[in-house]
Length: 106
Image (cartoon, rainbow, N blue to C red):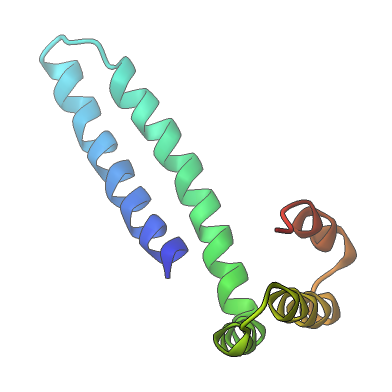
């Protein structure tokens, strides 16, 4: 759910920056902060959209991972849950995406 919340917040920030830009120009004030906000919120929007899409694409695998983690009482069993999730994601994702995910492994 966090990527979806980031998506909404980034969209709100982008709209606020776009609305502030003409107001600042009309008042003869510097627009650097608004342009910076638009840039950062655009980047956040893109990242949040990608994370949300990935979460939706791997929804079944992630649900199985969460269920596994609920019953995992040891570090070893938590590691086994992650391995099962990784294997399920490997079957569904291209190899280059998995290399990026492998770098983020706990």
